[in-house]
Image 1 (spheres, rainbow, N blue to C red):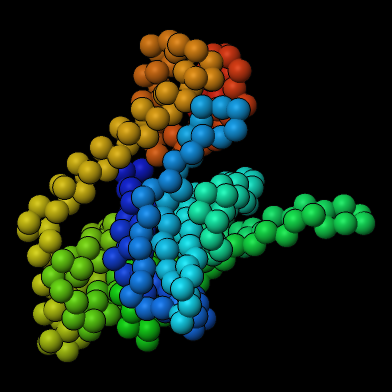
Image 2 (cartoon, rainbow, N blue to C red; image 1 turned 90 degrees about the vertical axis):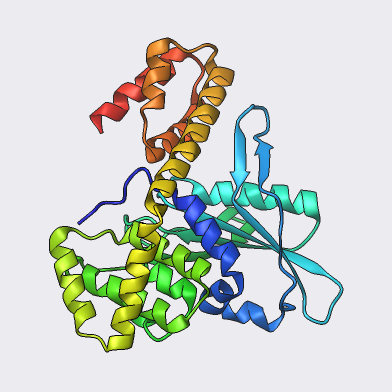
Length: 318
């Protein structure tokens, strides 16, 4: 069984999924919002970047969608934040995002987080409270979609392209991985989407359900048991994008994303502690995606170069 590689651009894949299938995403996870949204009015705003107060550190807000209230000449924003790793005090970050966006746009904001990590399985926090014994100052909430707490079997009959992709990230027993991949692709065949969107979804599924040789044999047995039309559809989906070298393109694009993230973290470190030694810079360049994200959080507390080297030494002990 393949573990999720550090080379996967999790945020990029999830953002593309939601932008491509925005309405289907709402239908699957937030159907109640469709009762007051004007269909067809979604506008995706430019990615937001802002500096934390008193520092040069940059924050990037992943996805902002402006939609219109049904029957009204007014709008609101969906802030949708894919989160591929568990983070302490994440609810504070979400509140800071909310405050900055509310200040800038002066529009109601509907915050949503998609937790896509494999562990922990404990329910993620979805609110922030500031209160005193006699007075509640703040109650901030955001919608939490925690995929590892959702059962893939509950989504088998949805026939929704987002479901076909995200079943691959839901709660799956190890022995069920071949069947889940089969069911994801089977749903994709049934949806009969255009080739471009079918290709993207098959790539998404394969990124998160890359099977071992033994699992591949079980997967093939599952496929062979299907009706001819479904069997041929799955095999066509499974092979067409690979034949065109898409996997190589994914790897190249991911490496470019990683280089940008490394550059950002290095610039932030230099702003905090000054020039870095060649050894420290090289060690930062070798970090994987998750370690880079963790360093981006930790550096807020750094004051000198020794803080960086101590953090890197601690990383080797974990």
